[in-house]
Length: 172
Image (cartoon, rainbow, N blue to C red; front, side, top):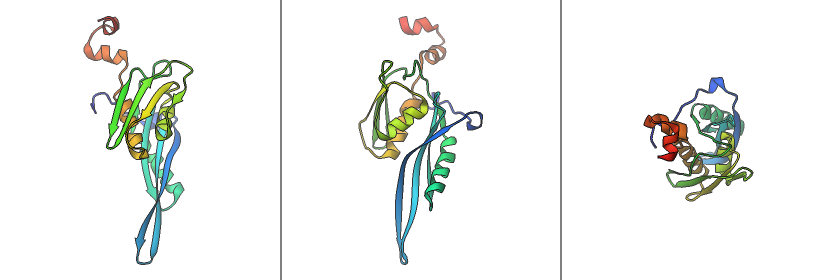
C-alpha cells in the first residue's frame, strides 16, 4: 500500500458513528476451568468520507466494544467519494482477505456483504458494487476493504500529483 495516498485524520474535530462488525468469545483453558474473554471489531466513520477500524479485547463485551471504538478513532483515513460512489474500480488485499470494489450508478445501493457493508456505509458510500473474493474472516475483510479505500484517488488528486490541468487527466 502506497503510504503517500493515505490521508490521516484527527478524530477530535468530527462526529463519528460506530458500527459493530463482529464479536468473538475466546476461551482460555486453565487448571481451574475455562476463562472467557471477548474480542470486538468496530468500524467508525462520519458517513462523509472518513472511516477507521479497531480491535478491542476485554473480559466483558461492553469493555471490548469501547476499546475497539477508541482504537478505531486512532486509525482514521479519508476516502474520496464522488456522487455517492467510489471514483474507480479498486482491488484490496490483506492476508487471506481479498476484496473488489466497483463504482455504481445512483440508486444501486450498497451491494456488499457482512464486514464490507459496515465499512462502506460508515465511509458514507451510497452506491457501490463490492465482492469479497478471499477469506470471509471479518478481521481480514475489514482490513482489505480499508486498504482498497485508502488507495483510491480522485481526478483532482491525480491532476495535482502530476502537476497538470484537470482536463488533461481526462482528455490526455
